[in-house]
Length: 421
Image (cartoon, rainbow, N blue to C red; front, side, top):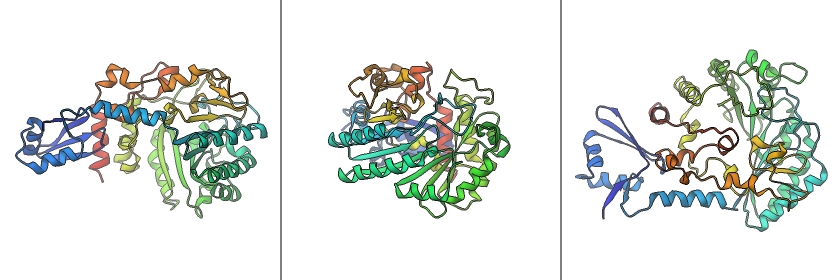
């Protein structure tokens, strides 16, 4: 049997007698000495155990094996599977905050009982078509402006899952200002296991970037509200939206979060992006993709992040769930979208729950037919199993390529994730 190297082997020399092979498909990492690496390069093996190890980790493949076809299979299988329903529900697009970088077009109003009923019918129909997992995200605006909707609709969705023998995982994105002991208890009761809350650095930066609509700061109250999760097994992912102005706060904020003493509360960075051309953002000094990657690596080096924070090591077969057929974002008017970044913008609407037969197939197709395997640059790229062509929203609406990988960046990620423990 003849064996050849995987096309997805990323290699570099780490030290004089230490060579790294990271396979971006299998996510396996091997460290070979010079003698072993020469055997790999020449495919002349004097060490049969080494050859077996390379085969087991997908670094060596049978020459007849269609590796690209194999990756395509998992990509298409993930994209068109009905097994998981990815459902994001926004009870309102109104918000009590006035964040200058917000990408949503805000509006008053709350989800009507009729739209809530239609969501239940929608989930029931998905279960009849084969859905076995309901992945539910509460979103907004600020969803906790209307906790009564979350309580009623959340309990009804739990009942649907039970009736149809579906498992359910539930998350929430909230600014954290309206949390109370009663609301945190409710979230636990309706099965919310993870909550995302944003702190944009320390008080001085955060209060300018994430004030109430009245202009009042919010840092102190949000930080205090984090203690409400002490008695519950809910993970809290504190997101810090970073740009050139506030990135220096990350390490200090990490110490503040760690000082809470709750291992379920973690901090992670995310870049501020200018994706809504209808608004003017005079606060943010945006980072480039390369600048953000370098910032993240520095944060890890300084002890702010751990290996688990590196999504490049995740197993996934699409860039995000918006590319999958069974993914929907529903706003308070019953309009349905594919991507969170489109919510509330009627020009991107796929259909309305109250009129499900009026479907804009082009709005759906722009996500489902986007194919990294049809792109010559993607096909030849060793990073393909990591990014699958990047964010489709940014490619479609912003005419922006979001391939954030370079040899140097991936090498640094590997060093921080595997060799800095």
